[in-house]
Amino acid sequence: MNHIQEYQTTFLAHLDNYVKERHPKNLYDPVNYILILGGKRLRPVLTLLAADCFGIDYKRALDAALSVEVFHNFSLVHDDIMDDAPLRRGKETVHEKWDTNTGILSGDVMLIMAYQLFENYKPETFQSLAKLFSKTATEVCEGQQYDVDFETRTDVTIDEYLKMIEYKTAVLVGAAMQMGAIVADAKVEDQKGIYDFGKYLGIAFQLQDDYLDAFGNPETFGKQVGGDIIENKKTYLYLKALEFASEDQRSKLIEEFNTQPTNNKEKVENVKRIFTDTGAKAATKEAVEMYTEKAFSLLKLLNVSEEKKIVLKQFGLGLMTRNV
Image: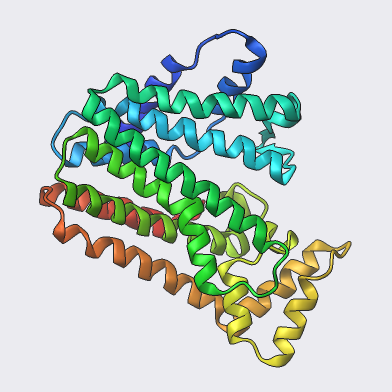
């Protein structure tokens, strides 16, 4: 079994042990439901990987990893309410299966449960984990607000978009890795280095998600290809296309993003053609590679073994070349 598979298997066993019947059931059943619904489990695996890289038994970081996963799923429950999303990972969202009030309250208790998991560590570790967690949770909320604001703005810049995905997605990836380093009592400079490594990978991950939403294989992507286009989301692809477009291309793209046609398939194909013709498609792939390389450039500064650096690099390459 390779390292990543071992982390996943061990984490899932820890999660299964955590998911148990609690009362009142109408509060905790939705919590258990979202936690066992699946997902990539990317963030907790990174916590365990980081702990292992800094020379401790990675199982000591299982509660920190679980905290990251509980928080991530809390954010999804509330995001789904804000988006009025009917499905999550192919199943009913919490607020659809129960109701909105249940989704809000169950999400609230998940945030508290995430903090409680830090209580299993010594006081100094608890303090460091909680401080990082509070900072990260605040930034995730700020990123979500930027995302909401962008829905009604027509002047979003590339820099603003990158800041939004850094806060909404990437900081939690960075924090997941730093938590593993904190549990391992790594030096502060190594904690910062592994955080930045994760943050840059997180940005690359989200840009790759933007790319796959438009150009992914429908059989492997796991979501509706073209969903961002149908919802008129101003992704990196869209913003790059506006930057590179001729006047005619710009007019057509803006027109497509201001309409809700009955034939979504035609709209998706028209927009994808503009993404390709303007060079936005190629530029997005280049950005994925650039942020991945920025992450890799930090590896030489980390005080971890060459073997562990290879594992970190392989993980990053896997994210960059994924098709799901």
